[in-house]
Length: 472
Image (cartoon, rainbow, N blue to C red; front, side, top):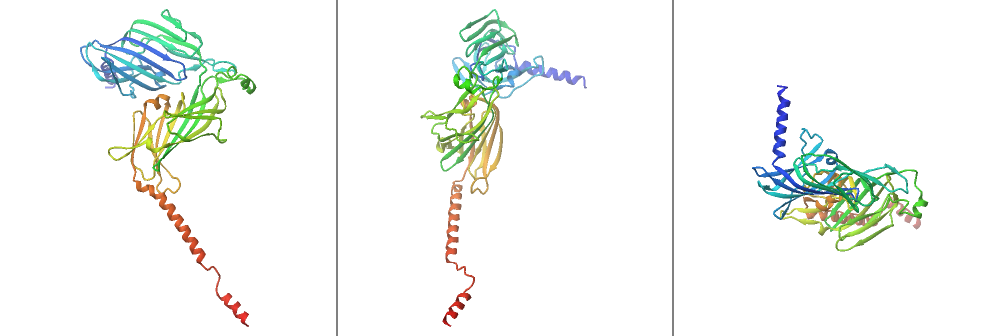
């Protein structure tokens, strides 16, 4: 019995894998574009998939090496067939068959429409990856530029046979070195490899690009956002950041004299300014840290949104850390709606308001009004959800707090995802604090009136005795 069990498991895995990754599917062409302008790697792949088998296919499997899968922040798949574009769900569940390709992670994508035999469909795969750019050297002086290394597979990683493919690296500037192949060419800041013909599944050949990139390497190790809802018409948002420079560390110390003399040359790898895109109609905006308010900021707003340019207290070099907070208020009617079922629907945009930042850990705390009940959260991506209570001024039972937590958050989460929070609220609770204030003021006046009319003399005998002695 002990000998048959491993064999049966292997057979079962082979059956599952063969049913999931059908050999009848062939990728006729792949164009892969890798954008390396930021410290966030964005990859767009245009695939043409052909069904050569006798059966219709309803699933397509995407494969990623484990090194990329663990740093995959988000992925979007667009399905095209006969000129019609259909957005599929984000593939958030992964499978990892322990077969020959044990270092691979597989993402099955359910096609919105079955691919019939002999038909061809298009798949556009948009992938966002973090923590893949490594500084080389790891330490630089204040006057040196930052050099990064990116390693990838020159072939498109797939469990299917690929007839024709190419890969393009889009770089921000000077290229230090790169892997040389016969099918390659460099045009300005684009490095193109291919086309490569007739490659079997899981073909692999490493490609390494060493290039200069002095763009902002801002990484938020911790980001806590608190959204407090008041049915008196206001939404108060507070964002607390702990940001580090995730690039090459600074060595041999920092010279402020050299930096002030020529910041573009002596400090090219540093950043001094961060830009936050706040929602439209933001008001009462502040920007401060532990020391106090920071006045070196600029606020610009229009109907499309509000832009807050924040100048940090000091330039950020590799390995340096800074903490600060921003806050602003929003009109309630732009974010709170009533559903057909009578529930209040709070529509929140998830993610950081700061541009081009990677958030290692984000916590969103939504403080609902006192008396909210039947609370539920709906989102299109996986988050850790919990609830707690918060007590504020004149609270009796406390305010429900919905806590959402997610790791590896990128700007695409704010762009594509919305978080909906449903809850029921009785407007009678709006009068609770007002009635408590009225009752408190009434009791205060009542105490004052009683005090003014009360005779606090010890006794009336003393005054009578004084009057009697006066007559004598």
